[in-house]
Length: 260
Length: 261
Image 1 (tube, each protein chain N blue to C red):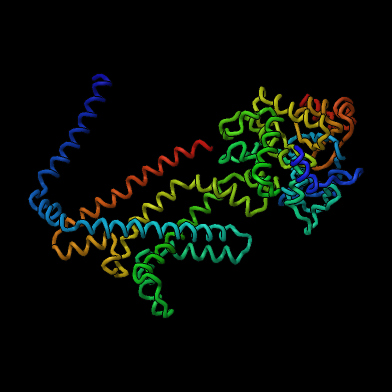
Image 2: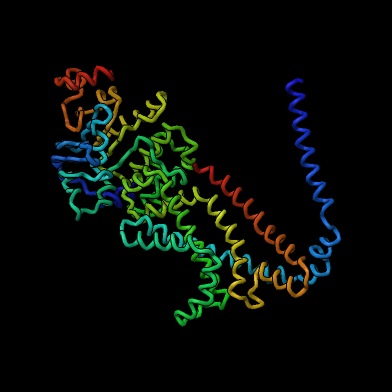
Protein backbone atom coordinates (compact mmCIF):
# COMPACT_ATOMS: atom_id res chain seq x y z
CA UNK A 1 0.00 0.00 0.00
CA UNK A 2 2.75 2.42 0.98
CA UNK A 3 4.73 1.74 -2.17
CA UNK A 4 1.61 2.30 -4.26
CA UNK A 5 0.77 5.62 -2.68
CA UNK A 6 4.37 6.83 -2.98
CA UNK A 7 4.80 6.18 -6.66
CA UNK A 8 1.41 7.21 -7.97
CA UNK A 9 0.52 10.14 -5.75
CA UNK A 10 3.01 12.44 -7.41
CA UNK A 11 1.91 11.58 -10.97
CA UNK A 12 -1.68 12.62 -10.41
CA UNK A 13 -1.35 15.42 -7.92
CA UNK A 14 -4.81 16.42 -6.75
CA UNK A 15 -5.97 19.73 -8.22
CA UNK A 16 -6.60 22.61 -5.83
CA UNK A 17 -9.89 22.40 -4.00
CA UNK A 18 -12.71 24.33 -5.63
CA UNK A 19 -11.59 23.61 -9.20
CA UNK A 20 -14.33 21.53 -10.85
CA UNK A 21 -13.29 17.99 -11.84
CA UNK A 22 -14.99 18.47 -15.19
CA UNK A 23 -16.12 21.72 -16.74
CA UNK A 24 -17.75 21.85 -20.15
CA UNK A 25 -18.43 25.20 -21.83
CA UNK A 26 -20.59 25.78 -24.90
CA UNK A 27 -19.90 22.29 -26.25
CA UNK A 28 -21.26 21.56 -29.74
CA UNK A 29 -20.86 18.30 -31.60
CA UNK A 30 -22.13 17.51 -35.07
CA UNK A 31 -21.91 14.24 -36.96
CA UNK A 32 -22.19 15.27 -40.60
CA UNK A 33 -25.34 17.38 -40.62
CA UNK A 34 -26.69 15.86 -37.41
CA UNK A 35 -26.31 18.27 -34.50
CA UNK A 36 -26.00 16.02 -31.44
CA UNK A 37 -24.87 18.56 -28.82
CA UNK A 38 -26.12 22.14 -29.08
CA UNK A 39 -24.05 24.31 -26.76
CA UNK A 40 -23.81 22.33 -23.53
CA UNK A 41 -22.69 23.96 -20.28
CA UNK A 42 -22.01 21.30 -17.71
CA UNK A 43 -19.78 20.61 -14.74
CA UNK A 44 -18.95 17.96 -12.18
CA UNK A 45 -17.39 19.05 -8.89
CA UNK A 46 -14.71 17.05 -7.11
CA UNK A 47 -16.28 14.22 -5.16
CA UNK A 48 -19.65 14.75 -6.80
CA UNK A 49 -21.75 11.98 -8.36
CA UNK A 50 -23.66 13.31 -11.37
CA UNK A 51 -26.15 11.09 -13.17
CA UNK A 52 -27.06 12.05 -16.73
CA UNK A 53 -30.43 10.74 -17.91
CA UNK A 54 -32.48 11.26 -21.04
CA UNK A 55 -34.03 9.47 -24.01
CA UNK A 56 -31.78 7.68 -26.50
CA UNK A 57 -30.34 10.09 -29.03
CA UNK A 58 -30.40 12.94 -26.52
CA UNK A 59 -26.60 13.26 -26.72
CA UNK A 60 -25.79 12.09 -23.18
CA UNK A 61 -23.30 9.41 -24.25
CA UNK A 62 -21.68 11.80 -26.72
CA UNK A 63 -21.25 14.36 -23.93
CA UNK A 64 -19.58 11.75 -21.74
CA UNK A 65 -17.31 10.57 -24.57
CA UNK A 66 -16.25 14.18 -25.24
CA UNK A 67 -14.99 14.49 -21.65
CA UNK A 68 -11.98 12.26 -22.41
CA UNK A 69 -12.05 13.18 -26.11
CA UNK A 70 -12.94 9.76 -27.42
CA UNK A 71 -15.28 12.00 -29.36
CA UNK A 72 -13.74 15.14 -30.88
CA UNK A 73 -15.77 18.23 -29.93
CA UNK A 74 -16.82 20.38 -32.90
CA UNK A 75 -16.64 23.61 -30.89
CA UNK A 76 -16.49 24.49 -27.21
CA UNK A 77 -14.12 23.96 -24.32
CA UNK A 78 -13.63 21.01 -21.96
CA UNK A 79 -11.58 21.57 -18.83
CA UNK A 80 -10.53 18.60 -16.67
CA UNK A 81 -9.08 19.52 -13.28
CA UNK A 82 -8.16 22.95 -14.60
CA UNK A 83 -6.48 21.62 -17.77
CA UNK A 84 -8.02 22.52 -21.13
CA UNK A 85 -8.12 19.18 -22.96
CA UNK A 86 -9.35 20.75 -26.19
CA UNK A 87 -5.98 22.55 -26.37
CA UNK A 88 -3.77 20.72 -28.89
CA UNK A 89 -0.75 21.23 -26.59
CA UNK A 90 -2.31 19.10 -23.83
CA UNK A 91 -0.88 15.60 -23.36
CA UNK A 92 -4.13 13.74 -23.82
CA UNK A 93 -2.74 10.33 -22.83
CA UNK A 94 -1.62 11.71 -19.49
CA UNK A 95 -5.00 13.32 -18.80
CA UNK A 96 -6.74 10.06 -19.72
CA UNK A 97 -4.82 8.12 -17.07
CA UNK A 98 -6.66 10.31 -14.52
CA UNK A 99 -10.10 9.66 -16.06
CA UNK A 100 -11.40 6.12 -15.66
CA UNK A 101 -13.93 5.04 -18.25
CA UNK A 102 -16.41 2.16 -18.18
CA UNK A 103 -18.23 1.18 -21.37
CA UNK A 104 -21.64 -0.28 -22.04
CA UNK A 105 -20.02 -3.25 -23.83
CA UNK A 106 -17.25 -3.71 -21.18
CA UNK A 107 -14.54 -3.78 -23.87
CA UNK A 108 -12.23 -6.08 -21.94
CA UNK A 109 -9.24 -7.30 -23.95
CA UNK A 110 -10.34 -10.82 -24.93
CA UNK A 111 -6.84 -12.13 -25.64
CA UNK A 112 -5.56 -11.29 -22.14
CA UNK A 113 -6.30 -12.81 -18.74
CA UNK A 114 -8.12 -10.75 -16.13
CA UNK A 115 -4.83 -9.93 -14.42
CA UNK A 116 -3.21 -8.86 -17.71
CA UNK A 117 -6.26 -6.74 -18.52
CA UNK A 118 -5.65 -4.84 -15.29
CA UNK A 119 -1.87 -4.53 -15.56
CA UNK A 120 -1.42 -3.71 -19.28
CA UNK A 121 -2.15 0.03 -19.15
CA UNK A 122 -0.50 0.42 -15.75
CA UNK A 123 2.71 -0.85 -17.28
CA UNK A 124 2.47 0.80 -20.70
CA UNK A 125 0.96 4.17 -19.76
CA UNK A 126 1.99 4.59 -16.12
CA UNK A 127 5.31 2.79 -16.48
CA UNK A 128 4.75 0.78 -13.33
CA UNK A 129 6.86 -2.28 -12.63
CA UNK A 130 5.33 -5.73 -12.98
CA UNK A 131 5.17 -6.40 -9.25
CA UNK A 132 3.58 -3.09 -8.36
CA UNK A 133 1.06 -3.34 -11.23
CA UNK A 134 0.00 -6.82 -10.13
CA UNK A 135 -0.36 -5.67 -6.53
CA UNK A 136 -2.62 -2.82 -7.58
CA UNK A 137 -4.58 -5.16 -9.87
CA UNK A 138 -5.19 -7.74 -7.14
CA UNK A 139 -6.28 -5.05 -4.69
CA UNK A 140 -8.83 -3.66 -7.17
CA UNK A 141 -10.07 -7.12 -8.14
CA UNK A 142 -10.72 -7.84 -4.48
CA UNK A 143 -12.56 -4.55 -4.25
CA UNK A 144 -15.05 -5.57 -6.96
CA UNK A 145 -15.37 -9.02 -5.36
CA UNK A 146 -13.56 -11.02 -8.06
CA UNK A 147 -10.22 -11.80 -6.42
CA UNK A 148 -10.51 -15.46 -7.41
CA UNK A 149 -10.83 -14.63 -11.14
CA UNK A 150 -7.28 -13.29 -11.70
CA UNK A 151 -6.36 -16.02 -14.16
CA UNK A 152 -9.69 -16.30 -15.97
CA UNK A 153 -10.20 -15.01 -19.49
CA UNK A 154 -13.00 -12.53 -20.21
CA UNK A 155 -14.97 -15.08 -22.26
CA UNK A 156 -15.21 -17.29 -19.16
CA UNK A 157 -16.97 -14.58 -17.14
CA UNK A 158 -20.61 -13.50 -17.00
CA UNK A 159 -21.52 -10.03 -18.25
CA UNK A 160 -21.79 -8.71 -14.72
CA UNK A 161 -18.37 -10.10 -13.81
CA UNK A 162 -16.87 -8.66 -16.99
CA UNK A 163 -18.21 -5.22 -16.16
CA UNK A 164 -16.83 -5.42 -12.63
CA UNK A 165 -13.43 -6.40 -14.07
CA UNK A 166 -13.72 -3.40 -16.41
CA UNK A 167 -14.35 -1.16 -13.39
CA UNK A 168 -11.34 -2.68 -11.60
CA UNK A 169 -9.26 -2.10 -14.74
CA UNK A 170 -10.17 1.59 -14.76
CA UNK A 171 -9.54 1.88 -11.00
CA UNK A 172 -6.09 0.33 -11.37
CA UNK A 173 -4.90 3.54 -13.01
CA UNK A 174 -5.75 5.37 -9.77
CA UNK A 175 -8.00 7.85 -11.58
CA UNK A 176 -9.34 11.02 -9.98
CA UNK A 177 -12.74 10.50 -11.57
CA UNK A 178 -14.79 7.81 -13.31
CA UNK A 179 -17.01 8.04 -16.37
CA UNK A 180 -19.71 5.40 -16.78
CA UNK A 181 -21.41 5.04 -20.17
CA UNK A 182 -24.63 3.10 -19.53
CA UNK A 183 -22.68 0.46 -17.55
CA UNK A 184 -25.64 -1.84 -16.92
CA UNK A 185 -27.54 -1.52 -20.21
CA UNK A 186 -25.97 -4.61 -21.79
CA UNK A 187 -26.50 -6.83 -18.73
CA UNK A 188 -29.15 -9.42 -17.95
CA UNK A 189 -31.46 -7.99 -15.28
CA UNK A 190 -30.26 -10.34 -12.53
CA UNK A 191 -26.64 -9.23 -13.02
CA UNK A 192 -27.30 -5.48 -12.78
CA UNK A 193 -27.35 -5.43 -8.97
CA UNK A 194 -23.74 -6.53 -8.43
CA UNK A 195 -22.40 -3.85 -10.77
CA UNK A 196 -24.53 -1.12 -9.18
CA UNK A 197 -23.34 -2.25 -5.74
CA UNK A 198 -19.69 -1.73 -6.77
CA UNK A 199 -20.57 1.72 -8.12
CA UNK A 200 -22.38 2.65 -4.90
CA UNK A 201 -19.34 1.63 -2.89
CA UNK A 202 -17.16 3.85 -5.09
CA UNK A 203 -19.51 6.77 -4.56
CA UNK A 204 -19.42 6.23 -0.80
CA UNK A 205 -15.62 6.41 -0.91
CA UNK A 206 -15.90 9.87 -2.43
CA UNK A 207 -15.01 9.08 -6.06
CA UNK A 208 -15.97 11.77 -8.55
CA UNK A 209 -18.41 10.11 -10.95
CA UNK A 210 -20.28 10.99 -14.12
CA UNK A 211 -22.82 8.29 -14.87
CA UNK A 212 -24.94 8.07 -18.01
CA UNK A 213 -27.67 5.67 -16.99
CA UNK A 214 -31.22 4.45 -17.31
CA UNK A 215 -31.20 3.20 -13.70
CA UNK A 216 -33.47 5.77 -12.05
CA UNK A 217 -33.21 3.98 -8.71
CA UNK A 218 -29.43 4.37 -8.75
CA UNK A 219 -29.68 8.03 -9.76
CA UNK A 220 -32.12 8.73 -6.93
CA UNK A 221 -30.15 6.85 -4.28
CA UNK A 222 -26.55 7.66 -5.18
CA UNK A 223 -26.61 10.79 -7.33
CA UNK A 224 -25.74 14.16 -5.81
CA UNK A 225 -27.21 15.76 -8.91
CA UNK A 226 -29.30 14.53 -11.83
CA UNK A 227 -29.01 16.12 -15.26
CA UNK A 228 -31.80 15.55 -17.77
CA UNK A 229 -30.82 15.93 -21.42
CA UNK A 230 -33.00 15.92 -24.50
CA UNK A 231 -32.33 16.92 -28.12
CA UNK A 232 -28.71 17.90 -27.45
CA UNK A 233 -29.39 20.37 -24.62
CA UNK A 234 -29.50 20.17 -20.83
CA UNK A 235 -33.22 20.59 -20.13
CA UNK A 236 -33.22 20.41 -16.36
CA UNK A 237 -30.87 19.60 -13.51
CA UNK A 238 -30.85 19.54 -9.73
CA UNK A 239 -31.13 17.29 -6.71
CA UNK A 240 -32.41 13.80 -7.60
CA UNK A 241 -35.55 14.17 -5.50
CA UNK A 242 -36.41 17.42 -7.30
CA UNK A 243 -35.68 16.34 -10.89
CA UNK A 244 -37.09 12.84 -10.52
CA UNK A 245 -39.80 13.59 -7.94
CA UNK A 246 -41.00 16.99 -9.03
CA UNK A 247 -39.85 17.72 -12.61
CA UNK A 248 -40.50 21.28 -13.80
CA UNK A 249 -40.19 20.80 -17.52
CA UNK A 250 -42.73 19.12 -19.78
CA UNK A 251 -40.07 17.05 -21.59
CA UNK A 252 -38.71 15.77 -18.26
CA UNK A 253 -42.21 14.80 -17.16
CA UNK A 254 -42.86 13.02 -20.44
CA UNK A 255 -39.60 11.07 -20.23
CA UNK A 256 -40.02 10.11 -16.58
CA UNK A 257 -43.61 8.96 -17.10
CA UNK A 258 -42.26 6.46 -19.65
CA UNK A 259 -39.36 5.06 -17.63
CA UNK A 260 -40.57 5.11 -14.01
CA UNK B 1 -42.89 -47.23 -53.12
CA UNK B 2 -42.05 -46.29 -49.57
CA UNK B 3 -40.09 -43.12 -49.03
CA UNK B 4 -37.26 -44.93 -47.18
CA UNK B 5 -37.00 -47.61 -49.90
CA UNK B 6 -36.73 -44.93 -52.58
CA UNK B 7 -33.99 -43.14 -50.64
CA UNK B 8 -32.03 -46.38 -50.31
CA UNK B 9 -32.36 -47.06 -54.05
CA UNK B 10 -31.07 -43.59 -54.96
CA UNK B 11 -28.13 -44.00 -52.61
CA UNK B 12 -27.34 -47.40 -54.11
CA UNK B 13 -27.39 -45.90 -57.60
CA UNK B 14 -24.93 -43.18 -56.55
CA UNK B 15 -22.51 -45.78 -55.16
CA UNK B 16 -22.84 -47.80 -58.35
CA UNK B 17 -21.96 -44.79 -60.56
CA UNK B 18 -18.90 -44.13 -58.40
CA UNK B 19 -17.78 -47.77 -58.65
CA UNK B 20 -18.19 -47.77 -62.44
CA UNK B 21 -16.04 -44.62 -62.81
CA UNK B 22 -13.27 -46.09 -60.65
CA UNK B 23 -13.40 -49.38 -62.58
CA UNK B 24 -13.25 -47.56 -65.91
CA UNK B 25 -10.14 -45.69 -64.84
CA UNK B 26 -8.47 -48.89 -63.59
CA UNK B 27 -9.25 -50.74 -66.82
CA UNK B 28 -8.26 -47.84 -69.10
CA UNK B 29 -4.91 -47.18 -67.42
CA UNK B 30 -1.79 -48.79 -68.79
CA UNK B 31 -0.38 -50.18 -65.54
CA UNK B 32 2.84 -51.39 -67.08
CA UNK B 33 3.61 -47.93 -68.49
CA UNK B 34 2.64 -46.26 -65.24
CA UNK B 35 4.93 -48.48 -63.21
CA UNK B 36 7.96 -47.99 -65.44
CA UNK B 37 7.44 -44.24 -65.98
CA UNK B 38 6.24 -43.03 -62.57
CA UNK B 39 7.18 -45.65 -59.99
CA UNK B 40 10.60 -46.86 -61.07
CA UNK B 41 12.27 -47.94 -57.83
CA UNK B 42 15.79 -47.67 -59.22
CA UNK B 43 15.25 -44.10 -60.36
CA UNK B 44 13.60 -43.33 -57.03
CA UNK B 45 16.57 -44.72 -55.12
CA UNK B 46 18.95 -42.54 -57.15
CA UNK B 47 17.09 -39.40 -56.02
CA UNK B 48 18.04 -40.05 -52.39
CA UNK B 49 19.44 -38.59 -50.27
CA UNK B 50 19.65 -35.30 -52.26
CA UNK B 51 15.87 -34.97 -52.61
CA UNK B 52 15.72 -34.55 -48.83
CA UNK B 53 19.11 -33.09 -47.88
CA UNK B 54 19.08 -30.54 -50.69
CA UNK B 55 15.70 -30.19 -52.39
CA UNK B 56 13.19 -30.54 -49.53
CA UNK B 57 15.51 -28.67 -47.18
CA UNK B 58 15.71 -25.75 -49.62
CA UNK B 59 11.95 -25.71 -50.19
CA UNK B 60 11.36 -25.41 -46.44
CA UNK B 61 14.15 -22.86 -46.05
CA UNK B 62 12.94 -20.67 -48.93
CA UNK B 63 9.36 -20.83 -47.66
CA UNK B 64 10.43 -19.81 -44.15
CA UNK B 65 12.51 -16.88 -45.42
CA UNK B 66 9.84 -15.69 -47.86
CA UNK B 67 7.05 -15.98 -45.25
CA UNK B 68 9.01 -14.20 -42.50
CA UNK B 69 10.00 -11.43 -44.91
CA UNK B 70 6.49 -11.28 -46.35
CA UNK B 71 4.96 -10.95 -42.87
CA UNK B 72 7.30 -8.16 -41.84
CA UNK B 73 6.97 -6.22 -45.10
CA UNK B 74 3.23 -6.97 -45.24
CA UNK B 75 2.75 -5.58 -41.71
CA UNK B 76 4.59 -2.40 -42.67
CA UNK B 77 2.46 -1.88 -45.79
CA UNK B 78 -0.76 -2.74 -43.91
CA UNK B 79 0.04 -0.05 -41.32
CA UNK B 80 0.93 2.38 -44.12
CA UNK B 81 -2.38 1.68 -45.81
CA UNK B 82 -4.20 2.55 -42.57
CA UNK B 83 -2.00 5.58 -41.91
CA UNK B 84 -3.56 9.04 -41.62
CA UNK B 85 -0.69 10.30 -43.83
CA UNK B 86 -2.04 10.37 -47.37
CA UNK B 87 1.20 9.72 -49.33
CA UNK B 88 1.80 6.58 -47.23
CA UNK B 89 -1.65 5.32 -48.17
CA UNK B 90 -0.99 6.04 -51.85
CA UNK B 91 2.36 4.28 -51.77
CA UNK B 92 0.94 1.21 -49.99
CA UNK B 93 -2.02 1.00 -52.36
CA UNK B 94 0.22 1.28 -55.42
CA UNK B 95 2.62 -1.38 -54.11
CA UNK B 96 -0.15 -3.81 -53.17
CA UNK B 97 -2.07 -3.39 -56.42
CA UNK B 98 1.08 -3.68 -58.55
CA UNK B 99 2.46 -6.87 -57.02
CA UNK B 100 -0.91 -8.56 -56.60
CA UNK B 101 -1.60 -7.86 -60.24
CA UNK B 102 1.61 -9.39 -61.62
CA UNK B 103 2.32 -13.12 -61.97
CA UNK B 104 4.90 -14.22 -59.38
CA UNK B 105 6.87 -15.90 -62.17
CA UNK B 106 7.34 -12.58 -63.93
CA UNK B 107 8.46 -10.79 -60.77
CA UNK B 108 11.02 -13.52 -60.02
CA UNK B 109 12.28 -13.27 -63.57
CA UNK B 110 12.56 -9.48 -63.25
CA UNK B 111 14.57 -9.63 -60.04
CA UNK B 112 16.85 -12.36 -61.36
CA UNK B 113 17.61 -10.73 -64.72
CA UNK B 114 16.14 -7.24 -65.21
CA UNK B 115 17.07 -5.63 -61.90
CA UNK B 116 20.78 -6.58 -62.10
CA UNK B 117 20.95 -5.00 -65.56
CA UNK B 118 18.93 -1.90 -64.71
CA UNK B 119 20.67 -1.07 -61.42
CA UNK B 120 24.02 -2.76 -61.93
CA UNK B 121 23.31 -4.52 -58.63
CA UNK B 122 23.49 -8.22 -57.86
CA UNK B 123 21.15 -9.32 -55.07
CA UNK B 124 22.92 -11.29 -52.31
CA UNK B 125 22.69 -15.07 -52.58
CA UNK B 126 22.86 -15.22 -56.37
CA UNK B 127 19.82 -16.36 -58.36
CA UNK B 128 18.21 -17.94 -55.30
CA UNK B 129 18.58 -14.66 -53.38
CA UNK B 130 17.08 -12.62 -56.22
CA UNK B 131 14.17 -15.03 -56.55
CA UNK B 132 13.57 -14.95 -52.81
CA UNK B 133 13.43 -11.14 -52.76
CA UNK B 134 10.78 -11.38 -55.47
CA UNK B 135 8.82 -13.98 -53.49
CA UNK B 136 8.97 -11.82 -50.36
CA UNK B 137 7.66 -8.84 -52.29
CA UNK B 138 4.83 -10.77 -53.95
CA UNK B 139 3.73 -12.49 -50.75
CA UNK B 140 3.95 -9.26 -48.73
CA UNK B 141 1.45 -7.64 -51.10
CA UNK B 142 -1.12 -10.36 -50.36
CA UNK B 143 -0.27 -10.53 -46.65
CA UNK B 144 -0.57 -6.73 -46.30
CA UNK B 145 -4.19 -6.90 -47.44
CA UNK B 146 -4.88 -9.82 -45.08
CA UNK B 147 -3.36 -7.99 -42.10
CA UNK B 148 -5.23 -4.79 -42.94
CA UNK B 149 -8.51 -6.70 -42.99
CA UNK B 150 -7.60 -8.30 -39.64
CA UNK B 151 -6.83 -4.94 -38.03
CA UNK B 152 -10.10 -3.52 -39.28
CA UNK B 153 -12.00 -6.53 -37.92
CA UNK B 154 -10.92 -5.78 -34.33
CA UNK B 155 -13.89 -4.00 -32.70
CA UNK B 156 -13.54 -0.22 -32.33
CA UNK B 157 -14.32 -0.54 -28.61
CA UNK B 158 -10.97 -2.27 -28.06
CA UNK B 159 -9.06 0.76 -29.29
CA UNK B 160 -11.31 3.08 -27.29
CA UNK B 161 -10.75 1.06 -24.11
CA UNK B 162 -6.97 1.12 -24.56
CA UNK B 163 -6.86 4.83 -25.41
CA UNK B 164 -9.19 5.72 -22.52
CA UNK B 165 -6.68 4.04 -20.19
CA UNK B 166 -4.02 6.45 -21.45
CA UNK B 167 -2.19 4.05 -23.77
CA UNK B 168 -0.69 5.80 -26.80
CA UNK B 169 -1.56 4.74 -30.38
CA UNK B 170 1.60 2.67 -30.83
CA UNK B 171 1.15 0.60 -27.66
CA UNK B 172 -2.54 0.23 -28.44
CA UNK B 173 -1.64 -1.23 -31.83
CA UNK B 174 1.07 -3.54 -30.50
CA UNK B 175 -0.58 -4.81 -27.29
CA UNK B 176 -4.29 -4.72 -28.10
CA UNK B 177 -5.06 -4.59 -31.83
CA UNK B 178 -2.36 -6.72 -33.50
CA UNK B 179 -2.64 -9.76 -31.18
CA UNK B 180 -6.36 -9.90 -31.86
CA UNK B 181 -5.94 -9.19 -35.59
CA UNK B 182 -3.48 -12.07 -36.00
CA UNK B 183 -5.88 -14.45 -34.27
CA UNK B 184 -8.60 -13.43 -36.69
CA UNK B 185 -6.40 -13.91 -39.76
CA UNK B 186 -4.76 -17.21 -38.77
CA UNK B 187 -6.78 -19.18 -41.38
CA UNK B 188 -6.06 -16.87 -44.35
CA UNK B 189 -2.40 -16.58 -43.29
CA UNK B 190 -2.13 -20.38 -43.29
CA UNK B 191 -3.47 -20.24 -46.80
CA UNK B 192 -0.77 -17.74 -47.76
CA UNK B 193 1.88 -20.02 -46.26
CA UNK B 194 0.69 -23.09 -48.16
CA UNK B 195 0.51 -21.10 -51.39
CA UNK B 196 4.03 -19.84 -50.70
CA UNK B 197 5.37 -23.39 -50.22
CA UNK B 198 4.13 -24.20 -53.69
CA UNK B 199 5.26 -20.87 -55.16
CA UNK B 200 8.88 -21.67 -54.26
CA UNK B 201 8.63 -24.02 -57.26
CA UNK B 202 8.60 -20.90 -59.48
CA UNK B 203 12.17 -20.11 -58.43
CA UNK B 204 13.46 -22.44 -61.18
CA UNK B 205 13.00 -19.56 -63.64
CA UNK B 206 15.86 -17.72 -61.90
CA UNK B 207 18.22 -20.58 -62.82
CA UNK B 208 19.45 -22.23 -59.66
CA UNK B 209 22.91 -23.47 -58.75
CA UNK B 210 23.04 -27.21 -57.98
CA UNK B 211 23.06 -26.84 -54.21
CA UNK B 212 20.32 -24.17 -54.30
CA UNK B 213 17.70 -26.30 -56.06
CA UNK B 214 14.36 -26.81 -54.37
CA UNK B 215 11.98 -29.75 -54.93
CA UNK B 216 10.50 -28.84 -58.30
CA UNK B 217 13.77 -27.75 -59.89
CA UNK B 218 15.43 -30.88 -58.55
CA UNK B 219 12.66 -33.10 -59.91
CA UNK B 220 12.71 -31.41 -63.33
CA UNK B 221 16.48 -31.88 -63.59
CA UNK B 222 16.15 -35.57 -62.67
CA UNK B 223 13.30 -35.95 -65.15
CA UNK B 224 15.55 -34.69 -67.92
CA UNK B 225 18.64 -36.64 -66.96
CA UNK B 226 16.88 -39.97 -66.24
CA UNK B 227 14.14 -39.70 -68.90
CA UNK B 228 11.74 -40.92 -66.22
CA UNK B 229 8.94 -39.14 -64.33
CA UNK B 230 9.41 -40.92 -60.99
CA UNK B 231 11.23 -37.92 -59.42
CA UNK B 232 8.13 -35.78 -60.10
CA UNK B 233 5.98 -38.23 -58.13
CA UNK B 234 8.53 -38.20 -55.33
CA UNK B 235 8.54 -34.39 -55.28
CA UNK B 236 4.75 -34.37 -55.14
CA UNK B 237 4.85 -36.69 -52.13
CA UNK B 238 7.46 -34.49 -50.45
CA UNK B 239 5.21 -31.41 -50.88
CA UNK B 240 2.37 -33.27 -49.18
CA UNK B 241 4.69 -34.38 -46.38
CA UNK B 242 5.46 -30.70 -45.78
CA UNK B 243 1.99 -29.16 -46.20
CA UNK B 244 -0.28 -31.70 -44.47
CA UNK B 245 1.30 -31.57 -40.98
CA UNK B 246 1.47 -27.79 -41.28
CA UNK B 247 -2.23 -27.31 -41.94
CA UNK B 248 -3.02 -29.75 -39.12
CA UNK B 249 -0.77 -27.83 -36.75
CA UNK B 250 -2.42 -24.52 -37.58
CA UNK B 251 -5.89 -26.01 -37.17
CA UNK B 252 -4.82 -27.14 -33.71
CA UNK B 253 -3.43 -23.68 -32.89
CA UNK B 254 -6.69 -22.14 -34.00
CA UNK B 255 -8.73 -24.36 -31.66
CA UNK B 256 -6.38 -23.43 -28.83
CA UNK B 257 -6.76 -19.70 -29.52
CA UNK B 258 -10.56 -19.88 -29.37
CA UNK B 259 -10.15 -20.11 -25.59
CA UNK B 260 -9.28 -16.41 -25.48
CA UNK B 261 -12.40 -15.24 -27.30
